[in-house]
Amino acid sequence: MANTVIIGAQWGDEGKGKIVDMLSAQSRVIVRFQGGNNAGHTIRVKGEETILHLIPSGILHEGKICLIGNGVVLDPEVFLREADHLKARGIDVSPARLGISKKAHLIMPYHKSLDKAREAKRAGHKIGTTGRGIGPCYEDKAARVGLRAGDLANPELVRQKVRHALLEKNVLLRELYKYDTLDEAAVCDELLQLAPRLIPYLTDVESRIHEAVNAGGDVLFEGAQGIHLDIDHGTYPFVTSSNTVAGNASAGSGVAPSRLDRIVGIVKAYTTRVGSGPFPTELLDDTGSYLRSNGHEFGATTGRPRRCGWLDAVILRETVRLNGLTDIALTKLDVLRNLPALRICVAYDCQERRFEYLPQEEGALERVTPVYEELPGFEEDISQCSSFADLPAAVQTYVRRIEELTGVKVSLISVGADRQQTIVR
Ligand code: GDP
Ligand code: IMO
Ligand code: MG
Image (cartoon, rainbow, N blue to C red; front, side):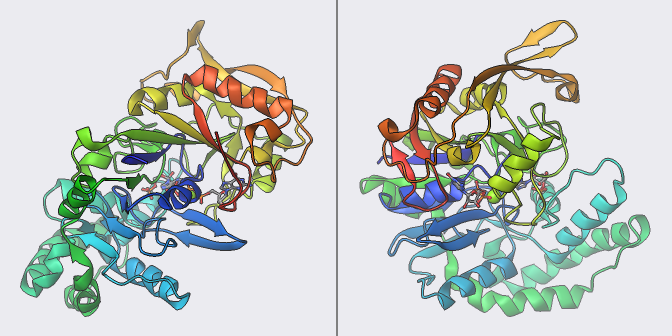
C-alpha cells in the first residue's frame, strides 16, 4: 500500500479514525505523529463503537504495530486508561505491539490547569480548546523545559523538572488566574506511580519505523485535528498547538520525508468545526441543524455540538496545496440525503475582490462572503451502496465536482460509520 499519511482536510472530525482503521488492514505499522488527547477518533465495526484519543486507530487489527511518535503530547493517565479499556475488551495492548517514543512530551496536571484557567480568563474571545493541556504542554516543549516520556526512567530528573516548572506555573495560577496551585510532591508521586506501567511501552519509534519501511513498508501515519487547525497554516489564533500538515508526519515520527509515498486527505462531505474561529460556510439555520442531527455532529472528545456548514472548496484547495494530496477519502456523504439542493463554496468575495485561495491576514476570513455553486440533492439511502456505479446520479455529480474543484481523485467514499460502509474506487 506504500507509506501513507492520513490528514484531516478541514477543521477536524472528518472521519480519520474510520479510514485509518480501514487502511490498517493493509499496513504493518500505524503511527500517531502530533496532537494528543484533544483528538477523538471513532471506529465502528459491526455496530460496536470505539473512540480513541491517543492510541493509533490501527489497534483493533490484531498484530499490527501501533506507535506514538515524538510529535505527540501524551497524558500518561489517559494513555493507561485507554489501554485498560481496550484490554478489558480483549484487545492486545501489550508493549509487543504498542509503543511510545521516549521523546514524546508528557502532559502534566499544571498544563491542564493552565489551559482551563486561560480559557476561563479569555471571556468573550475564547479559543474553545478541549481543556486537555495541549497548548501549555507544547509551550514547555518549545521553551525546552518539558518532561519527556523517557524521563520516567529517571525519578530524580522528573522531580527536578517538576520543581522547576511549578516555580513558574504556581505563580501564574495563583496570582494571575486565581486558580488552585499544585503540590510539587503530589505531582511527582502521582507520575512516578504510573511510571512502572508506562516504562515498558517506551521505545525507539524512529528505528521501528525505519525497520518497517526497509522491510517493505506500508506504514500508516495517522494525523489528528485538521489542516485548518495547524499552528502555522490554520486560522490563527483559533488553531491547535501543533503542525497538522502532512509534512509533520516526518518531524513528528522521525521518518525521512522521502519515504512518504501517499498523502490522503479525509474530506467530510460538508464542513464542521468545534470551538471558536472563522467558518465562512457555517449554517446557523435549519440546514445547519439538519446536518448536526443527521450527522450526529457532537464532539467525540468533549461532547460539544459541532458547528456545521456547506462544503468549502477554497479551504480544500489550500489543503491540497499545503499537503500535496495524492487522494481524497470523502466521508459522511450519506448525511446529505434529503436536502433539496447541495451547495459548495467555490470562492470568497471580500470588499470587491474575489478570492480563490485563503486570505492570510488575521481576521480576514471573518469578513468574506462565500460564493456558492448549487448542485442537485438526492433522496435515496446510499448507506448500503458498495460501488461508485451504485450511487445515484446526483451523488456521482457531487463527487466529480469535488474532484474538479480540488484537482484530486476521490479514491475512497464513506457512506456510513461502519468499517464496511466504504466504497473503494
Ligand atoms: P475523526 O476525529 O476525524 O476521526 O472523526 P470523529 O470520529 O471525531 O468524527 C467522525 C464521526 O462520523 C464519527 O462518529 C464516525 O463514526 C462518523 N462517521 C465516519 N464516517 C462516516 C460516514 O461515512 N457516514 C456517517 N454517517 N458517519 C460517519
Ligand atoms: P480530531 O483529531 C476537532 C480544536 C478545539 C479548539 C482548538 C484548540 O478528533 O479531529 P486544543 O485543545 O487543541 O488546544 O484546542 O482545536 N480541536 C479539534 N477540533 N477535532 C479535533 O481532533 C480537535 N482537536 C482540537 O476544539 O477549537
Ligand atoms: Mg474527532
